[in-house]
Amino acid sequence: MSVIEDTKELHRKAWSNYDYFTDSLEKAVSICQAAYENGENSPLFINNYAAVLLDLHRDDEALALLKNNDPVFSEYCSNYAIAIAKAAYDLELIRKWNQAAIKKPKQDGAIVAYMDWQGL
Image 1 (cartoon, rainbow, N blue to C red):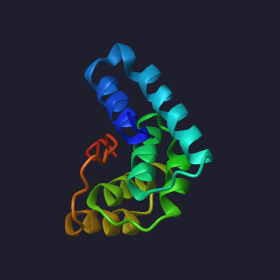
Image 2 (cartoon, rainbow, N blue to C red):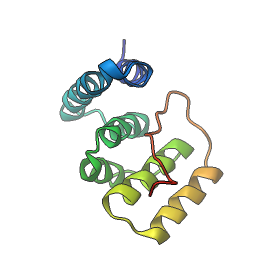
Image 3 (cartoon, rainbow, N blue to C red):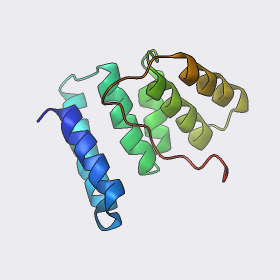
Image 4 (cartoon, one colour):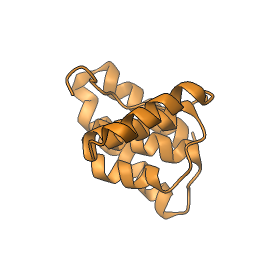
């Protein structure tokens, strides 16, 4: 499997069974970190890596990753809004990226981190 497929599968496993939540997400981060250090930097990869970091509450790391690329699809914009909400809490930027998420096309294979907007 590819890094993207592995990350998606570990993310799915984490959310389908809470007993595996942290272990699965930490394993996904390890896989992503190694790939990133080896030069992987496609927007889909960065998006999924950031989503896993966000689900582990590693919000500053996720925001730093997302800032280094141009958001080209909906899920990336959504994760960017989530990262800003959790790490920087800039309402204007949160709105901007949530609105951009509506306008951008969806990307197959993209992960969106969990966010409780009502609890914010």
